[in-house]
Length: 351
Image (tube, rainbow, N blue to C red; front, side, top):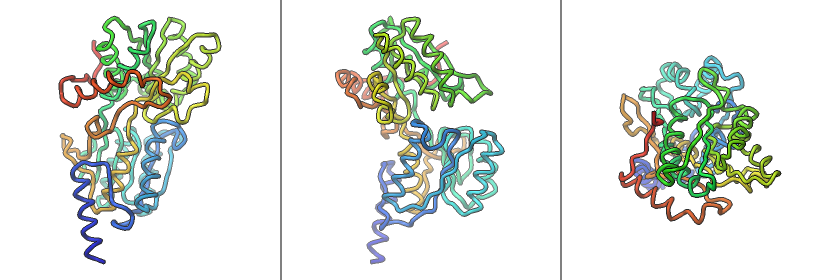
């Protein structure tokens, strides 16, 4: 029996090392006592945090992991630091921090608890041996969303609403605009952000996002991609209101397949969602821990973790609703060209 368990664990570890998004079952690995620290909005935001939660749920089911979930409410560095420190003191290992805003607090706490493995989503600035950075090629998935947007648009006028104007969200912008332009060189993309740093409230302000979306619709824009966390609900609501007056406006969701959690009225306008598989990344961390390993590919600058792009199935677009099924061949062709290196997707907006 011991020999069979050891063989299963070795097979699981080898699979993880190869970069596959699969892991051992609970019977073949050590059960872990893990924790996840969400940012504002937490589980139930129907976007970024929910994607992370899905990975946690999968680990609970397939790995038998014991998990603890916490969410910040004030959004200060001190609150994030306190949350992480309490989890570490309680012996949770690994601990996953969801969002780049945890970077500063995480560096402090991870230094204090070198024997605990941490992971952070969307940041690779914490160069510590016990921290795994989980980063994504958002520009690649957004490029595919841009292809779909250009093909679906009747007016050739398209919009992008970002949560906060930061480099991370500008990766979404850059990829999306590139995909639109590569598909329809005459199309235009109107770019707006809900807030400017240091105000990070743009990730949870649907009312303001709705005002922005309405302004775009008034200008004739008929496809709007919102990469703004909880604020994206404002974009969806604006499209629903527009439909009441016979004006069709397509929306594009982000992170999760937002069609699955949208209302019936919102679903009628939801062209697609740019999928950012935070769930796979979170699951990988817990699966690696259960196999006695950690996700630690070299990322450069002393940081370790993993980059999730098209090759790893880390980003993509959803086909829920069937609205972009007719564009699938062109979207697949773009994805193939990106993975083959024939298309270099920009990560910063053109000046």
